[in-house]
Amino acid sequence: GVPHRGALAVTRLQAQAWPRMLPGLLGRPAHDLHRDAPWLAALGWPPTEIGVIAGTRSFHPLNPSAWINRWHGATEDSDGTVELDSALASQATASLALDVGHTFMPSDPRVIAATVRFLKEGRFS
Image (cartoon, rainbow, N blue to C red; front, side, top):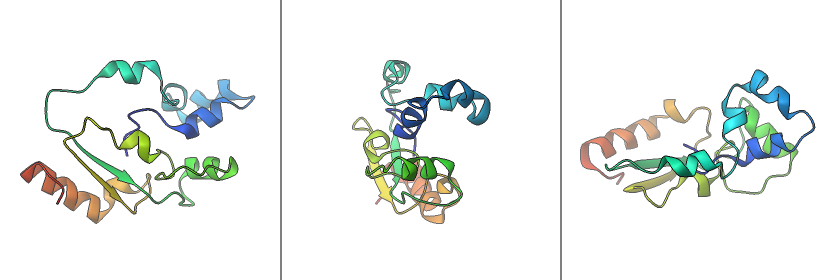
């Protein structure tokens, strides 16, 4: 669920009249993680195997970004916060999309099992 290209939810928030309040309300990511932020592209990729897991459950009531996306009528495939095309980076060694939302991805048993499998075998399947 890492926003390799940023998140449209942040971009949508920044388009509102009150973006100066965002860092105070939601922290620095609300300011820095807009879609295609130049600093994200400048990071590059480390010279190692990278596994990427992306979520496809676009709405969960406990995910604030999912509400923002719903309010804006977002239609992109996403985990409620990060769009699939931002999370599934072509530079990754392996990629996996699961029916899980952004907020609870780290504690989802399928995500944990897939992560362990990637760390042991260098692949998700």
